[in-house]
Amino acid sequence: MDWNQIPATLATKDSLESLKCSLNNGTVLPTVSFIVPHHLNATAQIPQHPPQPPAWKAGMAETPNEFKLKNPPTDGISAAKFGPNSSQFLLVSSWDTSVRLYDVVANNMRLSYHHPAPVLDCCFHDAVHAYSGGLDNTVMMFDFNTNSGTTVGTHDAAVRCVEYCPSVNVVITGSWDSTVKLWDPRTPCGAGSFSQPDKVYTMSVCGDRLVVGTAGRRILVWDLRNMGYVQQRRESSLKYQTRCIRCFPNKQGYVLSSIEGRVAVEYLDPSPEVQKKKYAFKCHRIKENGVESIYPVNAIAFHTNHNTFASGGSDGFVNIWDGFNKKRLCQFHRYPNGISSLAFSNDGQALAIATSYMYEADEIKDIPEDAIYIRNVSDQETKPKS
Image (cartoon, rainbow, N blue to C red):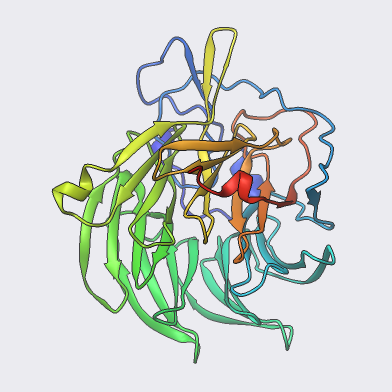
């Protein structure tokens, strides 16, 4: 089997579990073990040893400033996003086909709705409407007030990314069919389809611009006010497959992560003077007995007020970084599963941490349950040091 041609559309996660992480596409590095989840993106290109089960900590206890949400999804968590104007509500999509709305303050699930297949992403349009998409190839809008959903449109393959741009008032979806589509939430209906060079793996809104990461390590910057042409075409500065892109709140640039334990800080201004500022660094790596295990960096989330960001990896750790000053501010305790999604609340006082086993190390016994932790973060953890 050619592991670089994993099918882009699969009906259930059970069928994905049969796709083992034996991605031998290069020279085996004798002292490095690459831990590569295979089911969130359609392809992977990275040399690796046969995967070994990670040594997860058992019986993780909640800390005074952190708690677990009740009634978590029953399968892998694909996305967690706070509401646009409140830290009270959290939207969560999952491989169990559900999209769930949580009241974080009361610690209960307010409602849930389902797709026919696993859901890969979701977003708030406003306080009472959500959009979602996944392996059923459809884009769904759900009204919390009426508790009813509407199919807005479709892609020709799985919907990998769903974002909302408030400045242009448009919902954006990116798909493994190599297109980005815009949706007018007022109707709702389609507002355009735009070809990408390959499967869309990740997207992030940056003011009225959209940064798209595709297979083949390609990065495209679009102007959502004029989608007639691509503003910028780039190649990732990281050697391996792109996993996540998130834009700085100040709109100056974006942070990009890869499956090879590395993060890049990039700037949108193409001038040589500004481009000199870009850099990359290693993270989410664990060295044991002389062997360094390198984990994918699955999730990035920005603190809106401080322009610092959190990274989450398949090693089960969350780090907080000051990207402008090139410093790590802190590292949280190790979580029982890999970090699949991160989201800061709009006021920056809470961080949602979604943990799920993503089959980085093939089958292991006693897989911990999927969970969502809500951590009350302090300025000491998230504010740049002067």
